Amino acid sequence: QIPNLVKTVDCLLKKDGGVMLLIVRWRKPDLERAFFRDTRQQCHMEWELLPDETLPCRLNWTQVGDPTCSLSNACFGGEGMQISVSGGDTTTTKALAHVTEEETARMTATEYDAWERAHIQVYRGHRTLPTTTTTPDESCLQQPVKRPRIEGEPK
Image (cartoon, rainbow, N blue to C red; front, side, top):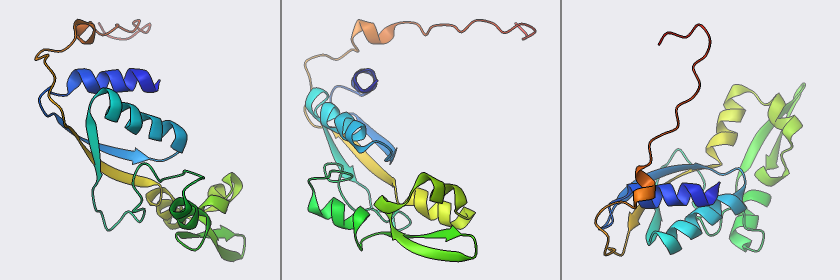
């Protein structure tokens, strides 16, 4: 899954300094960090966190969700980012890392929106090293696979 995505990025970006914007909703930080790491190594990409005052997470991609990173632990598990969680007649405030799936199901729309925004970041990626290739790899140019026609669907 990640290797295919990295290959797609490599194929689609200009070889001499391509740029892309990426909005990340952190769900499985190890996988998301693997994407950043692999694009950095294989595509010569550098990633810059873009400031957005509506998105509270200011950690870089190497830090988000890394259990060995004290900044990440403080941000998600400590006093850094707190979220309100409704529970019947009461509302409590908890660190993001301690909110359960059951609690997210009980959140109000406003609480859930804040929960989601706490896990979203926007990055600008740019290729730092030009390659000697000026055209995409032939494997990038394969035709898309057509899906089967659904019965009753117009042709």
